[in-house]
Length: 86
Image (cartoon, rainbow, N blue to C red; front, top):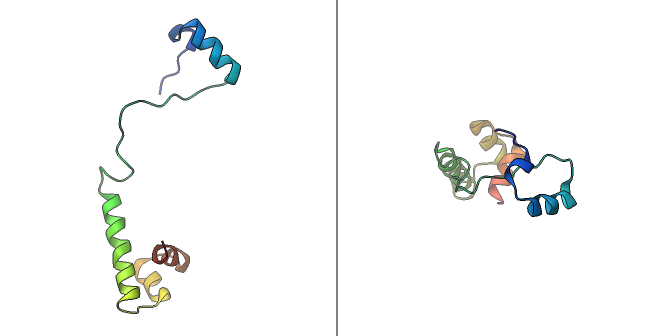
């Protein structure tokens, strides 16, 4: 990310208005381009969605206990509970 002086880019009116709210501070201005959601490009989002559904199926349909699920998936019991009740 490149830093640029706002006085070189912005019109004077806009610069003065911004100085009322954040004079002397560094501001981040996000890009207006549409970004993909987390994990969409790598497939991680789909992987975790499928894994969490498997955990729910095993718990509710096959009556596998939380501690067994936690060990088999390498997760804490608290994380398994969050997945189940979300």
